[in-house]
Every structure is written in C-alpha cells, then in structure tokens.
Image (cartoon, rainbow, N blue to C red; front, side):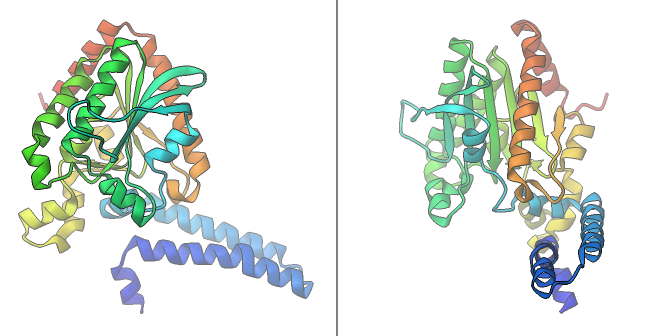
Length: 323
C-alpha cells in the first residue's frame, strides 16, 4: 500500500493530508463535544504537527510536484479572477474575422474604480465547461481576439491585465490551417508594441508559445506554484527519452518553476500562495493577486510610455543571453 501511495506522488499525499485535516478539525472535535471530553490541548498539538508537516513538505517540492499543483483542477481559474478581483466586467467577443473562441475570455472591467482590459485563458471547472473552453487551448481566432482587444485598450489608453493558464495552443489541423503560428506571433508582437501598461500573470500552466502570446508584458508575474515552459514535461520526455514516464526528470531539467524563472530574469515577480497552494485558500489567493496588480500598475504608470516600452523590449531581448 505504501509503495502505491509513494508512486502516485503529491496528489495522493495531498488527499491524505486533507483527510487528516478533516479528521482533526471535524471528527475529533465532534467526538470531544459528544463525549464531554476536553481534548483541546491534544487537538491544538495535532494541528500544529499537521501544519508543520505540510509546511516542510511544500518547502521541498520537486519541479514535477509543482507541475501537479499548477494543474490542480481546484485552483482558481481566469473566470474566478475576473469575477472576484475585478468588477463590472463587460465581455467582448470575436476576432472580427472568423469567430469566437471560448478558450479566451476578454473584456472591459473596473479595478478599484479604474478601467482595465482583462484577457484570460480559461480551462473550465466541470467537464462541460472544459469542453466548452477547449481545456484552455486557444485557437488562432482566440489569439486574434486577444490582439484586437489589446489594440483597443491601447487606442483608449486603458491598462491591460492578462491571465495565463494553458497547456498550450490548440494543435489541431484546423488551427494550423487557419494560421496558429502567425496568430501567436502577432499576439506577441502586439504585447510588445502597446504603450499602455501590460501586466501578465501565470496563474497555473504556462505552456509554450500558447502562453507566451499573452505573457510578454511590461511586468510578467507568476503565482508561486505555477509553471512556465517551452514544452510540457511529458512532451519533453517523449522527445528526449522516447518515454513520457521520464516526465519528472524532464521537469527538473526544464527549469519551469517560478523560482527558476525569476533567477533567470524571465519573470519579474512571484506572487506568494497560501500554504498548500492556491486551491486550499482561493479567497486569500485572489486578494493577494489583486494587491499585486494594483502595486505593479502603480509602478508602471509612474513611467512614461516610451520608458515602459524600452524596458519591455530590453527584458524580452535579454532572455537567454549569458554575456
């Protein structure tokens, strides 16, 4: 049994951890109430041990375990941020050329009373939602919609916030026929050309060019347990070792965690998550993200459009340089 638990990694250990938490907080508390026993000291001690163990576990996560947390289905999605961080969201649809891509949500909103353009890649929560949003894999017309909205925001001097959570752009035949590569490239170019403040946040998975299309802002932020990579660990493992069971080894070599990317100056800030990940305390995560957006926006607005654009170009061009 222990071998099975260890082999399945963090997911099972997290389930066990949640079960222990439930036993401590509910079952033992109810039992003490029913039996008239005073076990408050024991409960306090158990809680302290539980959180110490949880803290120790999350301090030494492997890159592959971080990938699993980034993919956790209960993490806040783009729609959650749009609903709770912003107000008065007014959705805008379509690329004005082909159609509407539900994998990318976008529209005007208010942030502390000020107008912003919000663009987010949505995975969905239920099976029906995931199918509707194509599991967070945008098509070319989704990226063209994002490009249209960024240009619209730039025209009316409205700051832009992008929320990225995608395994990658949709790799289907129709997507390639309709110019997936060109749509992604144009979206990246638009990110670099807009003169209004552009804040990009990786909230879960940041997969390849599909993520980069909306993650080339003035300030690129990552949640603590999110990932950002040129390829998925499974894809990398299948290419290098011809075996996707080597995904954990691939994750280690891809340097895809927020800590790695901050060290290489690919991102600008890490947004701290609650102990155990964003899925364990969504409200706290949403509040933390809102505060970070407000502070970052204030920093960017202190610069002139020319200064912002210059710093943004320098940051992108310096990626990968070692001299």
